[in-house]
Amino acid sequence: MGYEAHFRVWRGDAGAGELRDFRVEVNEGEVVLDVIHRLQATQCPDLAVRWNCKAGKCGSCSAEINGRPRLLCMTRMSVFAEDETVTVTPMRSFPVVRDLVTDVSFNYEKAREIPSFHPPTGTAPGEYRMRQVDVERSQEFRKCIECFLCQNTCHVIRDHDDNKRAFSGPRYLMRVAELEMHPLDSHGETGGDRRELAQAEHGLGFCNITKCCTEVCPEHIRITDNALIPLKERVVDRHYDPLFGLFRRRKD
Ligand code: SF4
Ligand code: F3S
Ligand code: FES
Image (tube, rainbow, N blue to C red; front, top):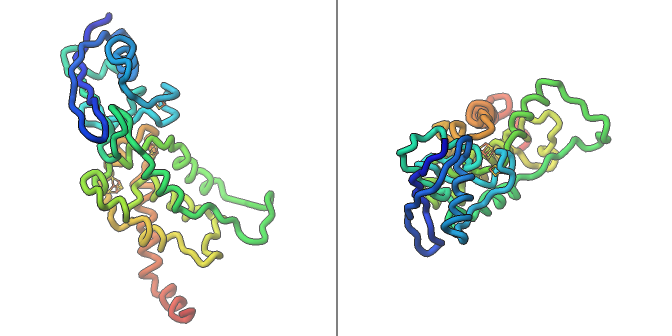
């Protein structure tokens, strides 16, 4: 059965903005993005919203619904009471472009700072061998759709914009962890060390394991337990392993 919902949508740009109230028709089985599209079609043709697949796979439609970071296309209207006000605002951790669209280039900059996979020198394609358990570990991380909801949620940057310089956020620390756990990654051959990089360049130490990133991930990736905590353990091993310390002193 259809009904009319009360929507409160943030409208504005980088300079200023405000929440505006609308009454919008809702039909059975619809998601929040359907209602936003109806709002565009019937009342606000210039309402800016980013979306693409409407299937939870492109990661474009990230926003905040009643203050909770979510995908607009994967949030069913049936989770709200018919008399409840549904408030839709842009992601808070990134600069607003217009209405519900934010500038997420911070994330692409952080992605570019991570050295790519480096196969062992002298190993020809086709000679790579990995155990199934190692393959499966990175499969989970590769489900990421780059929606940036985890980045938007992590309090390290959500509450402290200045930290963006020193902290890459859960999505990119997870990428460093993925490469660090890869048995064939030989970034160390180039003189680099991904554990040092995680700590010094990507701000792993800022993460105090609050797990908010994991809670909002639409792909249910266990970012904290399976990527960030193991990466922290590897960093600790590197710095406090007495044998490694001895070896390092000799090399120095
Ligand atoms: Fe989105 Fe999850 Fe990827 Fe973060 S890890 S960008 S929440 S899919
Ligand atoms: Fe932030 Fe996730 Fe760590 S929310 S503090 S990156 S566990
Ligand atoms: Fe692609 Fe929502 S439109 S994830």
